[in-house]
Length: 264
Image (cartoon, rainbow, N blue to C red; front, side):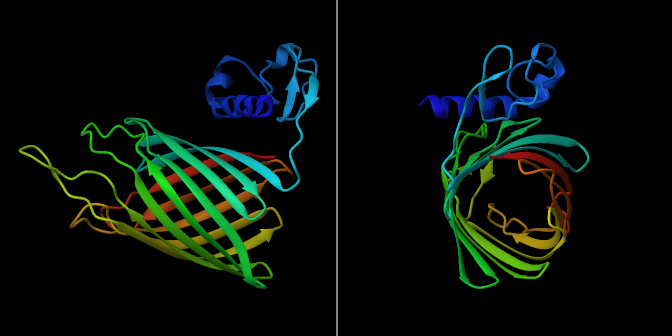
């Protein structure tokens, strides 16, 4: 329990980094401001005392890893959203928790997913997944319920080039609305995407992909986007990803995003 408590402390500190930065500088994210930190280079998994010096090192089993990713997403040059992603890796399994906070709408829905990675043959990797979308978003119509999702992803890597594609299907649980003010009818939705990636360096990967998502609203138009994605490993723990998504029809949005993550 102490281990989980300390991990949660690190997660909270990481997620609140933009807020904490306004108050004081904490370069090693140990909860002790730099001006009072006598050990300024402690790792994020260390338990420290009030002077910032390590009193215990947390050990993580070799087959177990975590990452924490915070991000910002700028939509149509007018709305800035933030996001939080936590991944737990155990052998070939991944448990993923993802949520977002909307600038004008509060907290978004929370995604809880389970994935399994495997290689059926050399050069081909696959990932299958199931998940739930928890109704933590306040729809103001009191009709937001749990959604369920299945997904599959496949990639082929030859030297530095990667061909990939995937699809998902979401069962929408939200209640239809039909009254004198609103008429909203939902439908299950599907998504597919395909793309091409390339490793320019061992720690720098870039890809371009096309995606098509059907609307969750009956008679709604599909969402069509073309996106550029970039991943950069900074060191063995820190990494960042950034990119741009261009909407290809009137119902799709343009988005710019950047994420920073820590792997341990």
